[in-house]
Length: 152
Image (cartoon, rainbow, N blue to C red; front, side, top):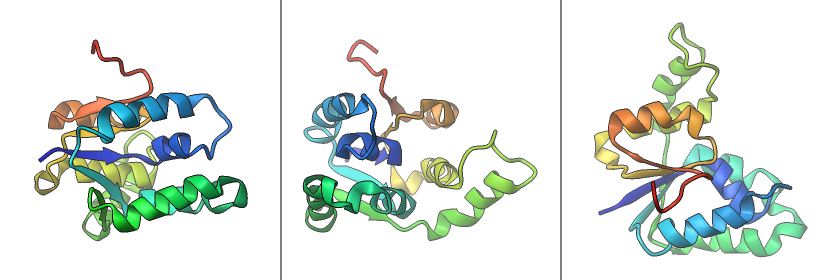
């Protein structure tokens, strides 16, 4: 089974909640990596909080929000993962003496999740590769970002 972990920034771009040029790239990545190839799209609850609590639920994003909320509730490939087991280690990475270069709590939760062999994460899709490249290399997780090309 293939599992892809998806970061908030990707969803912001894909759903068009940002005023930037990344939506086209996000759609391309979704169509290439997520839609046909991966059995499970892992979406941790902190990513849901960030994604849903943005402009997503505003009227101008109604079509995108309706699609996303429908996929979250009806698509068995969208796997919502509780973060309870990852909070404390991520919190310690965020504020503790061994903190990770100012990486956010949500990103640290993703990093801790990537270390969990039970989740069997095969790939991470993010537009913030700098916060994840080291852990992806260490865990042999494919890092897919805005600069990814088929030649890589």
